[in-house]
Structures are given as C-alpha cells and as structure tokens.
Length: 346
Image 1 (cartoon, helix red, strand yellow):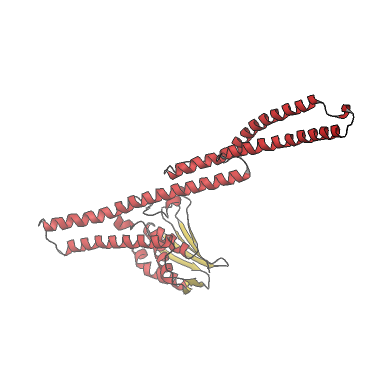
Image 2 (cartoon, one colour):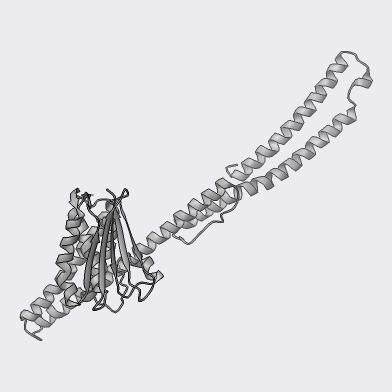
C-alpha cells in the first residue's frame, strides 16, 4: 500500500467503480420509488436491466483496476527510476543517470538529479585528484630533504653552504605549496578575508609591470601597458596585486625571447576589465578547459623549480571569484599566444 503505483491504481479503479455504483444506485432507487407509488409495472426498470448494470459495474471494476495499474505504473515509473538511482548514488556509484523523458515536471526533476550526480562525480574526482596531486607534489621536496640529510648523517659529504642553500630552497617550496593550498581552501569555503579599500588599478598595474621588467628584459620581451583612465574601484589591493603578478609573470615565463606581452585595462558599467595577452605558445581547447585546475601545467616538461607549484592560476581564479568577478582564458591554438582576462565588479 505504500507503493505509489498501488495507491494510484486503487484511486483510479475506485473512482470508476464509485461512478458506476452511483449510477446503479440511482436507477434502483427510481425503480423502488415507482413501485411504492403503485405505478404501472411497465414503467419500472426491468430486473434484467439491473442485472446487466451489476455485470457492467463488475466489468468496469476489472477494467478500471487493470487500466489503473497500467496507468499508475507508467506515471510512477520515472519516480521509481529516480529512487533506484538515488540508492546507487548513496552507494557511491556516481556514474548513474536517469532518462530525461515524461512530463515537463518529471523531465525537470530528472535533469536536476542528473546535474546533481554530475556535480557529485566531478567533486569526487577533484578530491581524489587533489589528494594524489598533493601527495605527488610533497613527495619530491620531502624525498630530497630526507636523502640529503641522511647523506650528511652518514658523512657522505659535509653540510657546506651550497647544500644548506639547496635544503633551504626545498623548504621554501614546501612552505609556498602549503600557503597556496591554504589560500585556495579559504577561497573555496568562502572564508578568504578581503580588506577592500578604494584602489587605483592603474597604479597597481604600473607597479606590477615595473617590478617584472627585469624578468622581461632578461628574455628581451617587450611589455606594453594600455589603459583608459580612470581605473578606480573598491577591492583588496594586495590580492589584486597577487593576481596581476601571477598573470603577467606567467605571460613572461611562457613567452619566448623577443616576444611581446600586452596588458590592457578598461572600466565600464560592469566593472574593471584587465587583459594580459602574450605571444607565447598558446593553448589548445583541452588546455583551456583545464588551465585553472590545481597543479595543472600546460608545459609538462617544466619542473617545479621553473614551473612553480602549479597553483598560480587556481589562486587567480579563487581571488577574482571572491571579489564577485570572473576570469577566463582564450587562445586560437598552438603558436597563437594566449589571453587571460578578469573582471572585478565596481
């Protein structure tokens, strides 16, 4: 009785039976009233009519029950599919999807369920990848530290200034990795504290470009800053400076010698738009889809020392979204350079 299709079957057959029962009752009462009034017996309904009504009522009950079961099964089947799929999801089988067909309400419910299952599957994959990536990233510097310290303890070589510098660099990488992960976790949980103040974005961009000029000069890369004035708004200037350092620094790092990096900025009703365009190797569509993922490096040949922790663009995305803005990457393909842009609402 607790099954939906059983309840619908009983309701449909019960309604049909009740309708024909009322019809039969009405005819019977009319016949009894005529007999009480001593009317002509030819005016009373014959007995065979009542018998046929009873047979028809029983037949209607059987047909109504059968039809009710069929209709109820058809109506409740999508909900049963959702129930079974939800049980599979609860067991961790996140690749389960339900057919999106039926009435508009059922289709919307199925679409919402499939979207939830897809999000859960993506989150689980991201968590697994994060654990694997963090373990992989931490393993190398920790192994280097362990090996070098073991060699010193075994008197394989002395702990001179060069070796101390090497160990110090590994500890710096570990600290930077842990700090980057902490910032991303704070941003994703909505706990990143932003100290928003009145900010001159022109000043921030100019200072960042000047700070990175020695790096671009070393590779003979031309840096150009194009802006419209004024560029003023409310933001956390320290965090925005971090975003600019990551984007412009990446553009310089992945642009070959004698290349060009162009920084553009403008302000409109939506907010402040900043674009960093380079003449580097460019990105494929697959790389554009993954470029903001944690520990992702477009150039797999780069080491941790030359390619960083692989968290720079993830931090950029987290900071911009914490400001209520958006960030995106564009590229026409390999050999056509890349453009990273972000919007900070005013």
